[in-house]
Image (cartoon, rainbow, N blue to C red):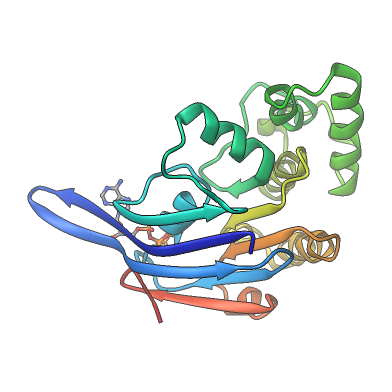
Length: 220
Ligand SMILES: Nc1ncnc2c1ncn2[C@@H]1O[C@H](COP(=O)(O)OP(=O)(O)OP(=O)(O)O)[C@@H](O)[C@H]1O
Ligand SMILES: [Mg+2]
């Protein structure tokens, strides 16, 4: 089991009112699975992804990543775990502006203490994998939306994470570019990466081997 979420609640207090963004969510994901998470807007999908990605703490409940209970870890330990295990393809996880594709993809490897030459080599290889070999030196504002999304995917892969978390990775893309991105996820899954993908699009969701539906903060 690569990931186990047990009885997770996430409650936000807004002007005295409590919002139960997650309301007793439990799930288990095995290594190498390809899972989609679907549900209406506001149902708690992104909240769940933030908690699975160790970017946010649950109000209560447990997250166990590769056998480690993450509750007692310091921010520094969590950052290390994220760098090693998790690749993020989040729309709100923007690329650094005024920074080339190559340097954006190198960023996690700098934190991961990978040396200069290996970083350059790996970043070039990954950008080639996503079809951006001609755009290595372009900054994000010199790339199309789909190309920026592909840089994000290349960056997510830099540390060869066991788990790739993608929140609406095809949301802003035309159907052809969206299909290309999905093909990349399928290829990564074949190589053994666990994929967890949030989507509104039922045509995208059915491509996963398992779909988890969430409504009002609960799995249905
Ligand atoms: N920081 C926050 N403070 C207060 N409420 C929040 C916060 N973040 C999320 N919420 C609320 O929690 C609920 C779940 O939000 P979440 O972003 O997880 O939904 P979602 O399923 O990802 O929706 P969408 O499909 O629109 O992206 C919503 O009611 C939202 O308003
Ligand atoms: Mg969301």
